Length: 384
Image 1 (tube, rainbow, N blue to C red):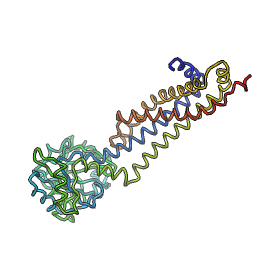
Image 2 (cartoon, helix red, strand yellow):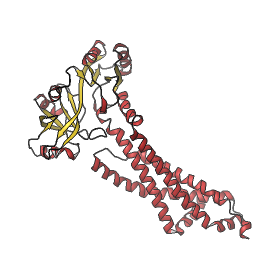
Image 3 (spheres, helix red, strand yellow):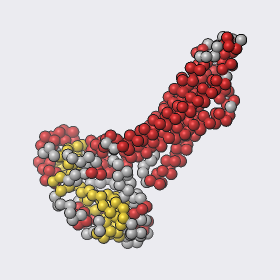
Image 4 (cartoon, rainbow, N blue to C red):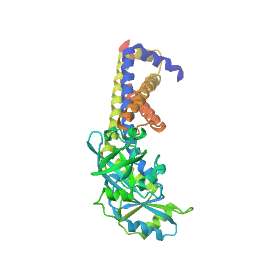
């Protein structure tokens, strides 16, 4: 089969303009698939970074909570009731709310996520949190996410220069006591961390004793799956008991199945695949049609139909490889630009690179298979 590749390559490069158009079309289709899959995966990853950072084995939430954007409160007595189980080492409540942050430089307001925790124990495995926990014990002090969008103001830059930074949060003046790193998501463009007491001062309508998330740490050697099942049987039915990984999957599933965003990005990937298939088919069909007489001559002198079919498939393989290379390179550049513009984790992964390469092969081979129908009409009798 390898001895037939030069014929396929010679046919493709004979029309250099047509070859360039084909490669541009394949590269465009690959870029479209890469971008759609990249944005989709960044959506999922960015929305579970908070979940991943939780230092807990088991998570409790209200049974009516769907995602971090729409958490329902529940009584903290449910959380402390978990201490009745011998395998439970400690429990930690977390408060969440979305509220307005007034840019101290422009005066414009923009919503962000406020996280309230007990500063006595670090429950968030995020850069900058542990070393700044003591500052949260002071009244009206918050930690600011340095990866928040620029619309909130150059807070991190001003703080790094040693300047005092303060802003109104939910109409209460709060001082930035430190920086941490979490990152923007599709649900929140910015994040704050403060103490549970500061949180309740900031949100006076938030009833004390009602929490949004309950974290449970188990004693060494305890099995999280077993304890989770025991808690499901022990706690009232209004509480959903999840392992940490189940909590991550629960959030991801919400964005994947309960919102239009996951469907839109998947549909965009399918459309890119279809566009690429059509472009390659048009190129290969034209290639076969222009050389129909030559193919008929080859049949007349003894070359089989299968030989010619393999030549067409090899042309499809060459187009797939040559089109994928510029598509991948341009995508890496676009990923960098998108990451800088949105602050979302739009990154290339090995799995995605391989998947798009496989889709490119399938795309080109489907096109080649369809174009081969024209090859069957190459009858030597029509030539001689």
